[in-house]
Length: 315
View (cartoon, rainbow, N blue to C red):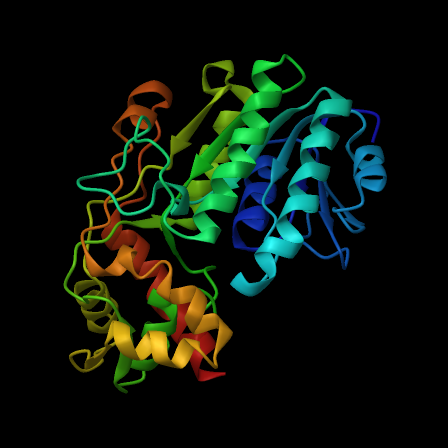
């Protein structure tokens, strides 16, 4: 590409949504994945390469105005091995190209908090996954403060939306059972208030952060609807397809710990169970006030999500 473009690393739900939003708005986009996959659009170029190869990624980013890290290294047990070289490579690509680095982050770095999470809530991770995400941000911020690169980060809660994979994330995993009328085993307290973030709202936030210099040098929370418990979210999804009242069986923390001794993913889930054992609430008022971003209407979001999830469940 000879014209300015945005480079997006990753073509999961968020990377795909962002690429399409940008392309639909007339911007050129280059999507980098290992397979060369991604959304199809006349303004989207798909490139196959290993983004953890710093040299290759720096070449792909040459001429980019924005580099967006929407990568997903896979399951939790892989994070400590895969994320550090990948994050360093993406940071270097932004630095050498002169592009703004926008990272798709999450809320793990905050750890358990009393009250809503806000932009000025300190990072106090309680497990290695949160500590890793916090280090990634701190490394990027240090480069920003040294004048090497301009960085920002969007932090979102658990995904909801028609493109959120049924096989990824606790709410869609539970919904795969309850929308079919079957009981679901849940972690934590299914009646604790919880913030959910629309995939398209994350993409919209990433797009704004990359082009607005007021965002640079800070992390921002993605606007989300008022918190809704797991039970109420599943009930609302089910009501749209006349599913029965969700039957939820709560797995005790001790059982998660015991099974985690032999099931690695459960060992990792235990480290973030606090997110579902107590209120887990996002307050993105500042993002709305500064950038004018609003969350997608909750009822409309569920209207679109329910049939998409149910169709994938029935395949």
